[in-house]
Image 1 (cartoon, rainbow, N blue to C red):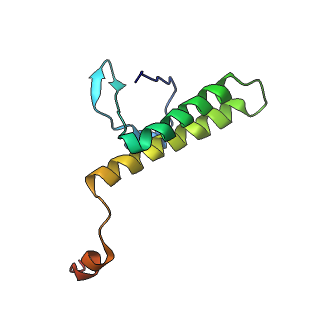
Image 2 (cartoon, rainbow, N blue to C red):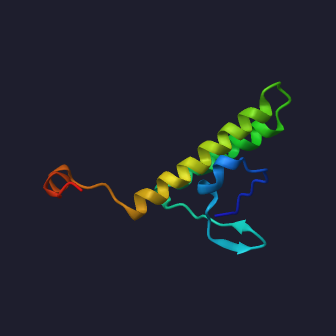
Length: 96
């Protein structure tokens, strides 16, 4: 496994998505579970390709893909913290 990095200027509404464990100098770290590694690897590749593109919308596409990566990370973290419940268990829980 190797490290993948992306440098960017965050948009204001990304604040929640960027709440990562800090290693050093405001650098975040995330290691996806095996089930997510292929997906994140593909997204990083697409971000690099779009960011190096010369097309009119290359930068916007790269930002869009980065947003997708950040949201997928939030989804992966949420799944690991709150695994899906069987419908029978969910139905038996009291509603708050």
